[in-house]
Structures are given as structure tokens and as C-alpha cells.
Length: 230
Ligand code: CA
Image: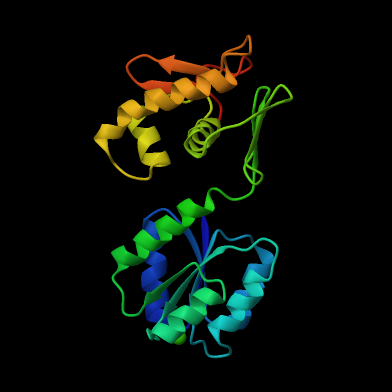
């Protein structure tokens, strides 16, 4: 996960960069708009953290340029301007979130995590064996046969495809798909897996969804090592 921070106040830039890097992110810093745009041009970032008041330009004009591109990173605005108008304008211009200075690092980190998690559902095609998933069109096909899935079924299958060959516990599936901890939901995973099996496995000779005794479930295709390679 690569993050670009455009912020002219060195103290804040340093504090944010060090904090995020110690949380495992790679962070580049630009001290003005021109440098920032050059970096955005050179590299694909997953997230842009953008200060609005920069020495050479207004952050909103950078935001406009970024959001006009075909593929753009998620954008978190960081600003001392906390007025409702400024927030609305930032969000209308396409920012994904807005954080007012001064802020606590834990709050920034929570927003960053949420935005990057959202970003993981970005355009992509997945394939495991003869099963393919188009995450943009939300279309699942096995052996040329289109399979209709309900939204939660789709989310579980997507999670399993992204983690092919790995045993996933019911708790992991719940926390990923429902985005929360909720003990009462772990049984529902079994119900959804049953639905998924009836749709993607029952009509095919090769079964892809495996039950991992004592753990949960795993998606495999015949060519995989059981340990998985992703
Ligand atoms: Ca500033």
C-alpha cells in the first residue's frame, strides 16, 4: 500500500509519515502542489492525503486534477479549514474523507485503514481454475456458465478467491464480509457457504470449496498445491 502525502508543514508531514510507516505503509511526502502532482504522475498511489492550503496552489485544484483521471487514488483531505462549506466542497470535488486539523494520529490511521480497505474492491478480474470473477461488472462465471450470486455470496466468494488455497476461519469471513466482529454471525457463514456450494460446485465434477476441519473453509482448484501460492 503506497500513500502520497501532500503537506507543506514539515512537522505534520513528518509526524504523519513516521506514524503511517510504523504501521506498515510506504509513504512519500511532497511539500507543495507541483511536487505532489509530479509524484502522482510518476507512481500509482492507493491513497492521497492532501492538505488544502499549500504554498503554491489550493489543494482542491489538485483534487480536481486527480479525480479527472481514469484511475485515481482514494483521497483524504487534511485541513485546518473545518467549516461545513469547506467539507462539503471537498467531498463534492471527489474527496473520500475529510479530517480537520488538529487531529489525533489514531483517528488518521482509522480513516486511512477504512479508505484503503474500500479501495481493495477496485477494478480487477480474479480467476481460480475455471472460475472467474469480474469485480467491476460483478459477474461470476464457471466453465462458461454465468452464476448469479447474492451480494453477500459474492463478497464471500471474492474473499475466498483472493485467498485461494488458504484456510479461512468463519470469524475471518465474518469480519471481512460483514466488516464487524459479531460472534452470532459465524453460523451464518455455514449457511452462505451452502448456498455458494449449490451455485458454484454442485453442477460441476470438481468441487472448489473445501471444508477445513476445525478451521473453516478454503477455495482450491485442482492445479493448486494444498498450501496455496498466493
Ligand atoms: Ca498547509
